[in-house]
Each structure stands twice: as C-alpha cells, then as structure tokens.
Image (tube, rainbow, N blue to C red):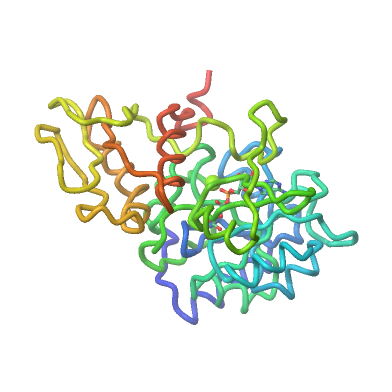
Amino acid sequence: MPIVPATAVTIKEAARALARGEIVAFPTETVYGLGANALDGSAVAKIFAAKERPRFNPLIVHVPGLAEAETYGVVNAAARKLAEAFWPGPLSLVLEKRAGARIADLVTAGLDTIALRSPAHPIARALLAEAKLPIAAPSANRSGRVSPTAAAHVAVELDDLPTMILDGGACKLGIESTVVSLVGDAPVLLRLGATPRGEIERVLGQKLSVPAPDAPVASPGQLATHYAPDTKLRLGATSVNPNEALLAFGKDVPKGARITINLSESGDLNEAAAKLFGALRELDQSGASMIAVMPIPDPGLGEAINDRLRRAACGAPPRRASDRS
Ligand code: TXA
Ligand code: MG
C-alpha cells in the first residue's frame, strides 16, 4: 500500500517521483488530488488512465501563487483581484492560456484556456516548493465518483495506484474548489465549490453569470452524474424508513433509519461540507436500500453542498470499466 505519512522526507520523495514522470496523490484543503508534472504529457496521461477520466475533461494546474500563474495563463484585472483575495485557497481560475506555455496539451484537453489554483494546504505547498513544477491534479477518485477527503479513500478508488499517497489526514474543507472563468467579457461560475459565490461577487463587485443550460458544456467536468455513490439518494427527506440510511443535518432528526450520520447537529455548513463525502461513502457501504438526505439550507457553502447532492442523486457510473456494458 503506497500510503505514507507526509513528512519532509516523503514530500521530497514525492517531488522526485513527479520529476521522473510518475503520479502521486496528496492532500489539499479541499480534497485529495492525483498529481503529475503538468509539463509532461505522458505523466499526465497516467492520471487519465488511473481515473478512467474522459480525455475531453481538462485538469486544474496547481501553482504556488500568482507569479507562477502568470507564466501559464493571462492574468487580467479580474483574475488578479480574485487571486489576491482568495489565494492560496479553494478557488480555481480559468484563464486564457499564455502563448508558449509549455503545459502539456492533454492537461487543457486541447482548449486555449487553463484552470489554475494555488492550494492552501501546507503539504500541497511543500510539494509544489520541492518539485518546482506546475502540478496538474484532479480529485483522486475514479471519474464520476465521490472525491476523496482522506488518504484511505484514494486507495479504495483507484486500481492503478499512484507511486505514493501522501497522508495528511482529513481535508479541512471537504468540497472541491470553486471554478470561475475570466476568459470572456463577464466572469462565469463554472463550478460551485468551497469559496462561496457571494464572497467572489463581493470582491469582483459584480454578479457571476452561469453558463446557459443549452450552452455546450463550458466546464466539461460538470456533467450531471458526478460525485455519485452506488446507493441511490432521496433528497429533501423529512422522514425515513428502516431500510434507509439517513444523511442528517441539524437538530430535528427523524428517527428509525438503519444508520444515521449527522453532517452537523449545530447546523454549521462548514462542518457539513467537511463531512459530506466521507459520510456518503460510509452510508453507501451500509447496505441500505436508499440514502435519504435531509434538506440543507442554501446560503454560503450550502449552495455547493446541495449542488454535489443533486449530482450524486443522478446516480453513479459503473464502479469498474469492465462493468460497463
Ligand atoms: O479542489 C479542487 O479543485 C481539487 C483539488 C485536487 O485541487 N481538484 C479538482 O479537480 O476538483 P477536478 O479535475 O476533479 O475538477 C476540475 C474541474 C472540472 O470540472 C474541469 O472540467 C474544470 O475544472 N476545468 C479544468 N480546466 C478547465 C478549463 N480550461 N476550462 C473549463 N473548465 C476547466
Ligand atoms: Mg473531480
């Protein structure tokens, strides 16, 4: 098993593995990432293979900060404002790719844009500093399934294990970064995430637009079925039956479920986000016929939590490629 505690020594080893073209998993403040040297196309190809990820779905490139972001993307005024306000942190910016950027084409799925993020997690930052490379890293789960928020989740998700899984404990935020595109005239919210929409709008001084429902998929990762466990979800549940597992929120929890996990008894949305994916995994393994999910309020992080739950309710893709008909 390649899980190792993240220490100064193992982080150096992981950086050397990246430089050799291997892939390593590492914690970020949002979820665990599966990283490769973004300048090395054959290293990046290993990520797509390990995740069984469709090649049209581009990856986020992780960098230490704005200075490095500028070598790969065109940082306009709005991008600078957002990076100054939220980096390092859970916000990914889609920018025009800089001409001559040596990023492998596979990273951006052939697009002329690039998603960049400066992660806040000290282990992710130490790895970037040691490797001195831009690190392409999607969430370290099998494509379409629940993102890993602990090192052990990575190991159960992937058949082709990375060279190393740096264990940094549970991810603090537990939900992926917000993705904002600054390529066109108006900033576009491509993915709800751990930086609440309202905070971004406050810094920009304008509303974020959302891609039109009939627009060609602006962020290819935003396909409806995503973040899905095997067990079906029933949203907005106010009562449960004994065959069901209950994902609860708040104090007034209906009794009688086969198993109940409360995302936050006190109604704290940060706590709920941090526990969400781990709780879905646990309830998925409980043998329940259905996961009933109590209503979760929409403000702040609630919007991203509800987005993930709606996608999870659309159902899971097959667990293994060989299961696909
Ligand atoms: O929190 C996170 O963002 C985590 C950690 C590891 O940093 N990463 C993550 O990556 O969630 P991934 O690959 O699971 O999701 C990246 C999202 C996808 O929806 C993808 O389509 C979108 O970002 N994306 C990446 N590059 C893009 C681009 N050039 N244009 C539009 N969308 C892009
Ligand atoms: Mg993902």
